[in-house]
Length: 308
Image 1 (tube, rainbow, N blue to C red):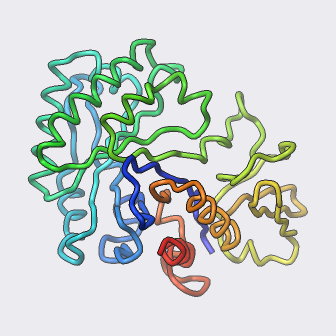
Image 2 (cartoon, helix red, strand yellow; image 1 turned 90 degrees about the vertical axis):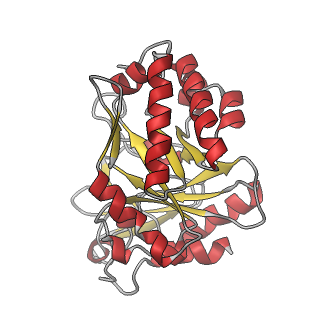
Image 3 (cartoon, rainbow, N blue to C red; image 1 turned 30 degrees about the vertical axis):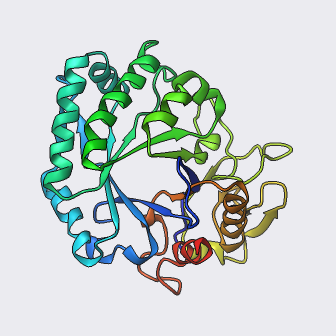
């Protein structure tokens, strides 16, 4: 079974009794007609809206967004957001100019209203912290959120911000008070704790472990495996009780981190215990979309069940 790349949490600044399930979605992964809208409270479209590296203006792929907006025809109360994903230089250019930010915010608001969308998700990875980022990004991003909020809020549009889980990044990149003041949702990308990089992080850990391990495992690995590999008798399944996460390893030295019902349940229990605003999944296309190994979207269905 093709498994979730991650399960994370998000912070809803005004929590409700229900636990929303935010689903990131790449167009045609799966097709719009196959998106399990009954399992998600919010669906965020990614890779269809960007910032121009030359002008700092909004660039959208209208056919993508138009097709995405058709989900409202099936479920009126479904919250549809579009994610702005761009390079650090693009974000730096935009947020360094107040006039550009005002124009961008006006155009973005008009686009959301035109396509009957409910809001925007800002995914800047990461202000002030990344190698190609600028020191002024942190304060400029704060101003950007303020300006965005001033345009979106009067139209009852949602402002979501994707942030990294590691505090070593967040402390440098964001003013938390500003996030609390202007963002309606904060998507915490806990999988950033263990991102493989040949130079800076040449070992891999769990996808999005619930708890830290006592020691890292010094082997390379891959994510998102098919069910045949999970069921392969030559691979050994292990449950790490400290991280509350499973992994596999095989005779070839391949080490695989993945999600299973037990790890999903543990994270959902923690989300309820912490009383966070909800859970976030990236992305729904990483589940068993076609039911190749049984039921379709088995992990997302479990998340939705436990969220009730």
